[in-house]
Image 1 (cartoon, rainbow, N blue to C red):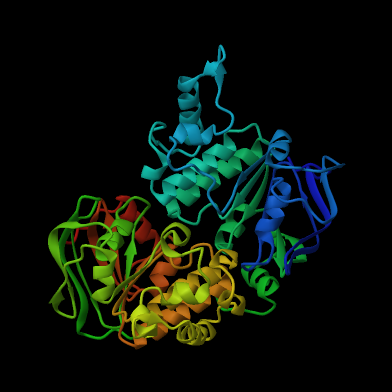
Image 2: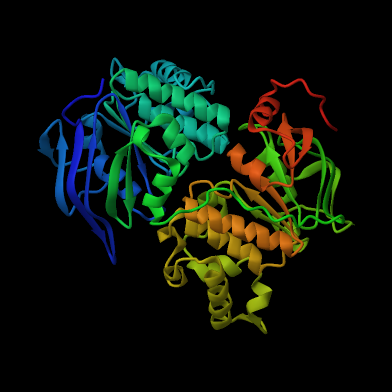
Length: 503
């Protein structure tokens, strides 16, 4: 169904922000009935390009063409009127409103001059059903998990009469089953003649769903190739300018002494009798599908959710975790799933974000030493290869990979014995992933116990010394490194396997 004339085309587009040329002479052609992947490292210009097509930004030079006609998209509404629907990496949901209100935000259906609430609810149900998702349209978005919010965001996009769907990191918080469900929807839309622009750091997804891929680097076009004529190694080489081994080189640093012990832990938020131990220098991976209770376990260990039963011990000492401060004092740290909402202070620069959990180390008497803060943070930033601009700029201006490394720097600065990583490589490029993996090896070598939650099961199996499969707020199976295949992990997580549940 691919059309000969591009549905949308960018020709020699340039876009500059203060001090940064985000796009420099970039051209791109999108055809009906085709999934076109846009790939590149963080900061390469992918999201800027998507925002030009969706009318959020206007190019400083170059042309935007729709069905061969040069157009000016003066805002998102004009792009939407031409059939462009967008799912951005940054959510555009209103937490206080219902699912139905968010899906129809700004375009609520009317009946005899008043809002047709039943029509909005029914339309929301139908849009979600196309993703094979059942979410109550009357629930507030604030009550949903991150994965559920992503489904609402995607449903909002596909509920419009669109001819181009832009998906910017649509699977960042989804498990394998949810990803395959989304890809099935994409294939259906393509068969119906929709053009798809698919932006993702997950190259396995790109090769699974896209017919064409375009690579951008440092705001410039590297090249466009047919997926069938390209290998993953070719794509990585185009993205970073050199070969990069994707596989994680795991260091075996696990020792015998337990660093973290969890005994029959229960909370009011879906943790239902969880027991496990993590040794010094060990990586324990929590595998499961969205909603299984993995993040809820992390929240309980970090004192966000109060436990109603059970016991948590660090180095043999029982801990009473009534707040994150209690957890930090006990040496437990959390890198949260949603770094933007729960992890970073966007009104602060990099150094303040790094030192926030260990202010005692930069105190001189009753005052904080900004010079000491800057000096200590600069050293960590160099070790983690964080963009030097983070020293003087708000972290909101950093790429996703740099934001993630700033949070890692925070827990390297604070005295940490147990580090919980919830989706640590979500929304970061392949080079930044390697930095995260390198830090994991260094931390385990220093004796820190690590709990990793990842919806990328290939990654989880590679980096973990042991896997604990979570389902229904309980751990139902343990396996050592190499004892589970990805297929077996998916079956266990989804409840399709018949193996005995572990206590």
